[in-house]
Length: 105
Image (cartoon, rainbow, N blue to C red; front, side, top):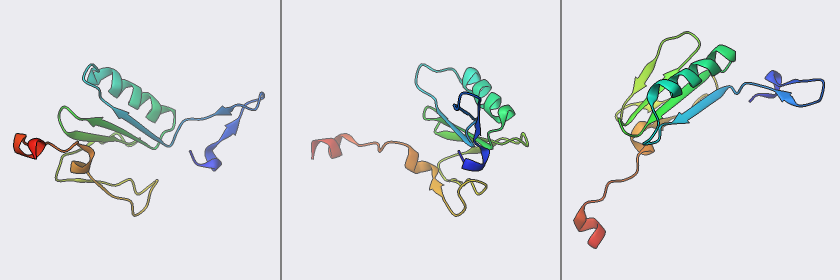
C-alpha cells in the first residue's frame, strides 16, 4: 500500500484497499469464490489482482480495465504499474519435481 493512498478514519485506523492482491488456490479451494474476492478488491480500488493456481500451473492477472491475462510456465509476470523492472518467470513459482533416482541419491 502506497502511503499516498492511505486514508485515516476518525479513530485513526487505516481505511485501505491494497494496491496488489495475491490469492493462491489451495487444493480445497474453488476458483469462483477466489475470483469474486479478487474482483471485489479491484472494484474497491486495488490496481492489480493475481490468482495463482498450482493445480493448473497458471497465474491470472486482473486489472481494473477488465482484461484478464493468463500466464503459463513459459511466461514472465510483470507488474510495471507497481514494480517497474521487476520480473518473475512463472515456472519459478512451482516446487521442483524430483524423480525417484534423484530422491535416492
